[in-house]
Length: 445
Image 1 (cartoon, helix red, strand yellow):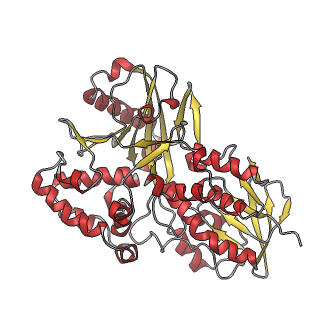
Image 2 (cartoon, rainbow, N blue to C red):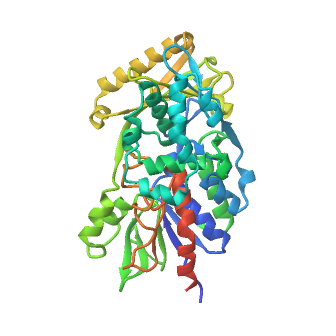
Image 3 (tube, helix red, strand yellow):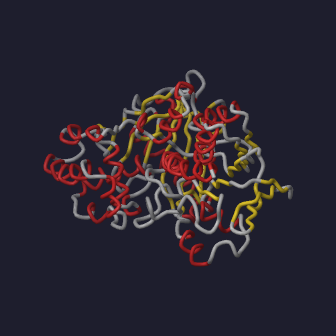
């Protein structure tokens, strides 16, 4: 009997990772993506000949990352040339300070006094050498339980680390999630603190490489095409209904966009009980940001990432994309993106956005005296509902949406809202790795 294709909803990192892992096993997949391009939240656009990311994205842990593990599994790492992101610094209003990549760097870190460095080591060393399993006991504890006891210099260190590692502030982060990040960066535990970004320009290049592999495997990716409903009968998946009301038969569906949206949108009311829906809906945590791309006529810094530290800075991260890879910009021009979290109501207020952009430009001109004379154009974006990279203490790792549910055979969930560790795209790929054996076990039956 010919096996029915596996339907995957969403062509972001989670859906595409699942797709290539299944395609490698000779399984036909059909991916449906509501947008006109792959990449999900990492999709990029071309504007005035610059490649602009939808926010700043980075591959943490480089060749130890879950994304790299997926690419390695299907032997396509050579298709994705990556640039290392390692020139990272703090700026404290006086000067630049090297971002620490290891224990020795912390001891030599000029941002904070020596006594504070020793206090940091007392906190970080036990974390770095603990076991992953033990970090689950810390998932309900806020990171601020540790940081609130520290001096202001040490708090600035945690603020910058959390912005780079989680794109968030310490008060939203679980101590367990932070500890897992420190472990994965520890070379003595087989980890690495290296970061990477596609050298070809645009973080969504990762998704395009995955999509090419899936198509080469004779599977399909349908863009600008939505799934309206997943049909369930007698506790089993029997098919999906497309946006044009066409019914497509399948006995296996993988949902790769936020599970808390999916369970409220894709199923008849009786499939999940209210208690389960309420539990999963708690994961619906979002943040709001203002991000501004600036194009310059000349290079104003050789660094790749700079974190202004101190409560007075609106600019929480300055990312020099063309210093990471010049392929994002036309010859002679340079691209950077500056971001800051904001209150949701601020994203609906044009005058407030203009005020934030003005403040960013003022800060950039103070840090870099040549900024104003080099500025060619700016493009501001305000995002009201951005998927939170981390949720909050108690809603991480194994407390997220499970990959499958007991009452429906053939239904699976992947992505960063499901059981996985890490953040963003790396979390989505890790989720696919964890879900893959479960999907294969079901298909083998």
